[in-house]
Image (cartoon, rainbow, N blue to C red; front, top):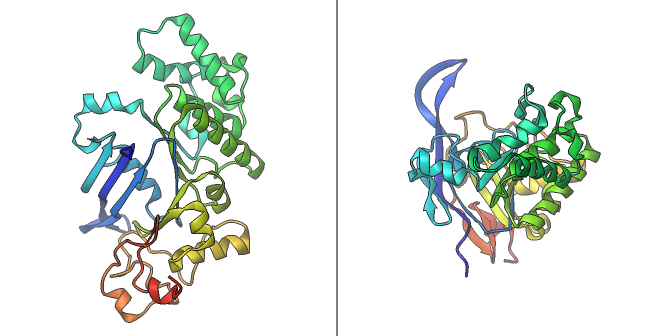
Length: 325
C-alpha cells in the first residue's frame, strides 16, 4: 500500500484568550488532536460551522500559522521540523486558493505579472518566451483567453478573478491544492463552473485537494472523503457516499438536516449557538447542543474510533444510537 501524500498527526493550534479585545490568562485550542491522511489524487472535504477550525487547520498544515503540538508529514518528511530554506523548496508542491478572489490578487499587478510571479520565484532560469507561453497556457487551462494577460484584477468578474487565482495556484503543477471556501463568495451558477474546473484540473494534474466549504452539495460533488469538524476536533470522517447516506454523529446529522431543509448548511444547525473562542464545553464539545447528550458526555472528550470500515466517529453514544452496527 502506498504511503499517504499528507499525514497529519495529533495536530493542535492554540491562540491566546481574549475578552472584549483584552488579552487574558491562558489560551484555547482552535484545533485540537486532529489526525488524518490524504492520498495522492484524493479530495478530502472539510465541513463544519463558522469557527469550527477548518481554515485554522489548513493554514497550520501549510505552516502559515504556528502549531502547538503534532506532526505534519509531507511525503514522509515533517514540515514542522523544516528550516525556512527547506520549507520554501516544498512550497511549490502545496498551493492554496482563498475565499475572496479580489483580496488574494494584488490590484497593482497585471494578470501577466500575477501568473509570472511563481515562475520567477521557483524557476528563475526560465526564458521570457517560455514564461509567456506558460502564462498563456495557464489562462487557457482555466477557461480564459491568453490576450487577457495585460488586464488588471478589477477588470474581471468575481468568477474570472477566482479562475486567475486558480491558474496562479496550479502554475507549478502542485501535488496538493487547498481550497479554503474557494467558491462561497461566488454566485451559485458560477460555483458549479469553478467546482467542475477544479475537478478537471485534479484529473489533469493528478493533484490531491483539501476542499473547505459550508455547502454540503458542493462537498458531496467533489470529495472522495469528508471530515466533519466541530470546536476544533474531527467528530466524523468517512467516504462521501457513506457519510451522506449513513452519518453516525448527531452533529453530522444536524448538518445534513439543515441542508435538506434549506438547501445548504448555513448558520445554526442545532439548538443553541456554536461555541465562541475558548468556550467549548468540557467533554464532548457538542454536548450542550446535542439532543442525545447524557451526563457522561460532559465528562470526557470522546475518542475518534472506527464504527465501520473507513468510517470514524467521536461520540460516546454512537453504538446506542446505531443499534444495527
